[in-house]
Image (cartoon, rainbow, N blue to C red):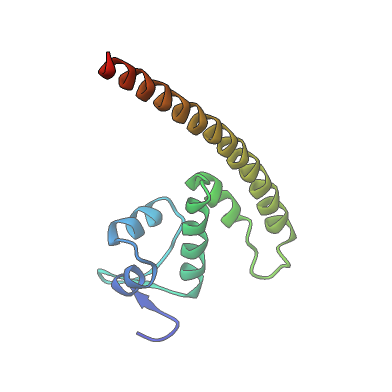
Length: 128
């Protein structure tokens, strides 16, 4: 393949995903590889989109959120609309993650305390 085009296997190897994952993203209209017979060929646009999809998933965005942000891309424009929407979505997601992190810290602290209390109870009962 040329530098511009990659096969499904090359995409899988480059991004550590399965063919099923790529086909799933294609079915959700997140990727649009060229078709040559039974073969899918991915261009630079597909690679850039897959990188953004995987990054978005890592940050906890839904595929629908990612699709909406990707649809705002205009190759002829300065993409102010897309970038503005991305920043807004990222700030909202960061606020959610921070809230979850705080809730998790509290839960970890509570569970640690519960374990310590039960261990003390067990120790006392074993000595009795």
